[in-house]
Image 1 (cartoon, rainbow, N blue to C red):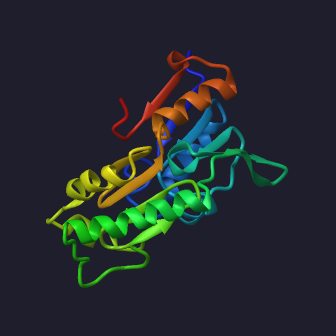
Image 2: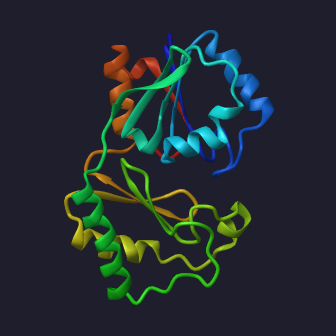
Length: 208
């Protein structure tokens, strides 16, 4: 009776920001032959390509929603095409980056001595802070014990009351437009395929 099977990406189909395994690729291909499959994640489309899409060879019945549902893609005419993409404006991005600077000063936040890649990444539809950087190895992220993300979020909310700010992944903070999250992604899937929640199974992640 279920028509669409939705998966979270990091921590479900793959380890956080790591490549999908051949076994999982084969399982997904078998599932796609009998059901529509949607994959939702906080990662950018570029990151979806890097750890997930480039390993696939079967794309029928597959739909992806990067940046927590702020964008929605389907594979058509041999390429990924937008169903929609809710881009942040340059003004919104500047407001978010400025809010992070003010927050770091306000709470006297010091970045770790060793970081990997960008600390704050512009993902076009969202802005994401990662304590150790966007390219930090999973082992280092898991080993990080001192987590000031709740404190950062509390401060950011004062500067960005019209945005949704949430702790995500192993060491990240996502900033999106209010109302954009994986629950929103599920609602867009309902509308696009004209199905009810009872006809969808969601696997993985903390979605309520």
